[in-house]
Length: 303
Image 1 (cartoon, rainbow, N blue to C red):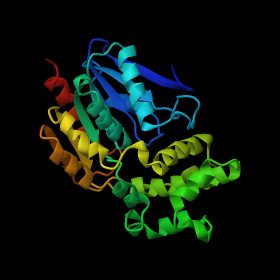
Image 2: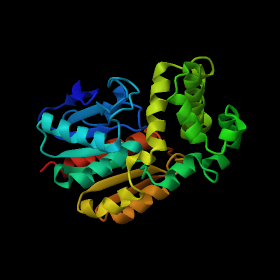
Image 3: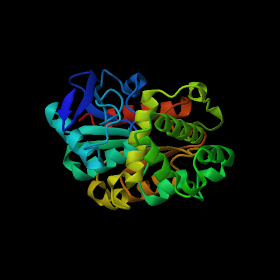
Image 4: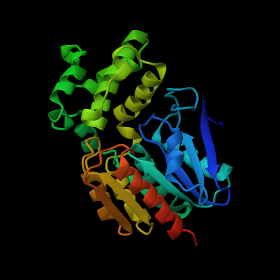
């Protein structure tokens, strides 16, 4: 647990102490690392570093929003690199984790050995509009969208993001849990499609669900604390880096157009579109692609 401002940031290492350092960056924002995230990497070849970003997972306080911005997270990454005495590391991130990986690499290109990115999220207004805007994914799941906004008063439905954020950050605990439930139901449907099972969300909303939603909405309402098009505009700084970009064609959270545009800006990158995969790091095709990319990078960067 590393003390950073009013936060304690959870960091763990596994694999080989003499292996190629790799930093795993989780998505969300706010989701935290899972045990299976270690398994993308060969422990004989990699020194595997994972962290739960501020307010997420095992970092404390859970759901804390003070001193929790994108620049705070980037400073944490560089602090961890110094703390662990890592010279250069491979960055491995999906969705929001891919955003962080790109921003860190642009800020510290000499400390970045390469990138493996999944389901890239570019943090543009159009990316947020796709998820919650009038002409986005709601057109694919209109019934789920109607359920989502149906809990809001009529006057709040034109700006549901602000309305849900207000409830999540308010003092009414019941309103917090209701808002977190509806956000989790909508997000789950878009992420998993027809495989989504609401499960206990229909009966109980845990504090973990509330905290994750708080952090995620905190970033979304603040446009992820990054200037419009900052990620793509900054690619000139990392055009020399090797990168493998993996994206599921059936990704309804981050359409494949984002990774295609990124690939155009990174001449050393390889774009691998998986025709049957979706957004999450699950399913045989996606897992094989991610493990394969990690193995390839271990060989490529071994020297």
